Amino acid sequence: MKHESKPKFNPTPEMVNATKAVLAAKALVLTLRPIVEGYEKAILAKHQFTNKAEVATLTKIGREAKERVILDPKESYQMSEEDFNFYWNECKAERERKGLWVEQDDFCPLLVAEDLERKAKNTLLEAMRPISKIDPDNLWDMDNRKKLIELSITLMVSYCREKNIDLAEGVIR
Picture 1 (tube, rainbow, N blue to C red):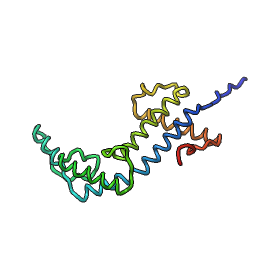
Picture 2: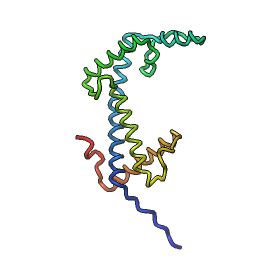
Picture 3: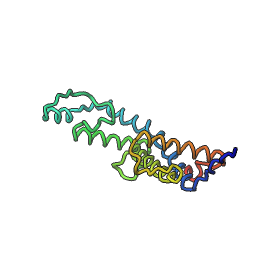
Picture 4: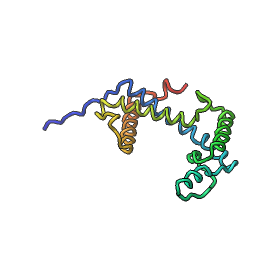
């Protein structure tokens, strides 16, 4: 009985670099999330902005809505424009106090980091395409996309560990 040998896995430098980029972006998101969400929530709690703009819009179209205080930054879109502008200016001032740098003044450091992570994951999926045989542009199911990303990272981290490749080299200064 003849044993078939497994195909040899030889990742490209692009695969290694894409893995480094995903891990660095994940670390950045994990670092920034508690800082940014912390000051956003503190500002919301301090100023007690309400969803009155959302209530007014819903009332106009005949839907019932109750005014309430917004405590979740993801619901800040429900504020009046005036309240949101005040909130956003407070966020920018707090960002500066925390020493968080962004390329443009109206950028949120957490959203920038999340975008960087999304782009790094897309690059990883594209780099791993010769191995996975999956076109990332045709991967519409988000659960399967997430699984493929995690499998790719696990495979690459295992390979890099086995070959003593430093995944922080060239990423962390």
